[in-house]
Length: 469
Ligand code: PHE
Image 1 (cartoon, rainbow, N blue to C red):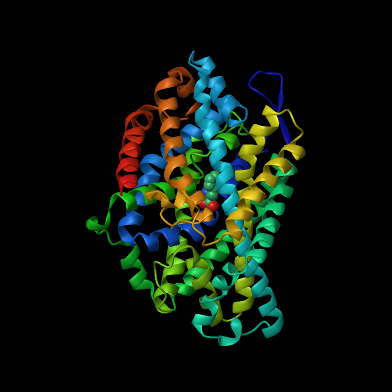
Image 2: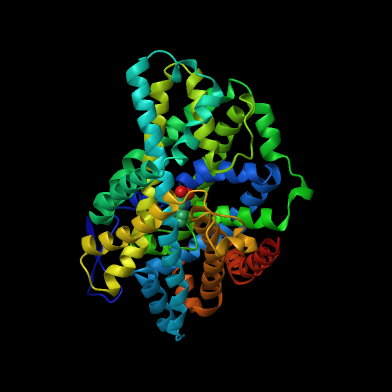
């Protein structure tokens, strides 16, 4: 691990060992279940093309400027997210109350962590299924001995019906996350990001190319990329912007926290561009991988959260070496999810460790323990509408899992992003921002315009039309 000096010039501060290690870790945070599990599910539930194209627009015009703003705050502040905001506010002669934007973020990260680890548990379940399938059916043929698609599709609802198993798997996934975060920034997180993310890209691409050759591809292209303006309703726009934030790990202090570990020699603008491109590429690959299977097998595109878990195993059934490839695939998804959950745990941990002056391992354990309880409740009460809350229009009939998802992606993340862009665009001193953003000339003007005017205004409008539904 590399130890650099904090912005006060005295406190030693953990850091990434190199620029590429930071990029990999930030890409690792961005690329995760949000791309493979949430993106196809949201695209399907929101009617395909209109959602997808609006999502891409959100990534470029809102996500990217906010991403740069968050990393910039972290690197300049050199501390946990709220403290970084406070330091920049103080340096700019403004109120320290702005730190509240990051406090909200830390809360959001904690909430996402709780339900994220439940889905991480589903991934573990499928690893188990493919491992036992490999042992029982051998290497050569497809998976599940050609059992009918309906039976394979039924595996996930089977898990949903078993609360104890879901809770157990959630705990197992969270415990693994805890293990990595407790080991510290570079030794734990970097290792996973450096070695496993690139391997994952290659495997995922291979499966997509194979899938594309087996049918359903033309239908997928039409479905994902035909823009039907009439489908672009307020709720669809809010879902798309929420997905952009979720996928880029924005609005929940995560990228601020990681930004604090970046060296001064790193150009934050180009790095943000790399992170956003890689993240969007993986989401689109996921769409191109999953929807052909959905169409070819006659599944419903709007099947919701189960889409990835129910469609891909059907493709592995028909593939040569299907059990092995299925096993490898879910192991890779597990690691992609881990590099994201690690960043979700890191944000509240960094906050708590500094606030309560606790050793890293203790702070991590307390935060993880709390997420364990909240996630366990979400898993146990799967499908049970939350009393009181679920009568509100936004959370209509939703269980705890979905309430946590909706509250973060449709409220906390956009609000966090509005506050972040206002803070960077209007509150922080221009000199400070200029020295950090890595931009110059026309690009800097465009970025400033987006952060000052476009992001807050467009987000506010989308939130209003989206929430009024
Ligand atoms: N971006 C991650 C994913 O797509 C999830 C995440 C959200 C991670 C917010 C950190 C902060 O899986």
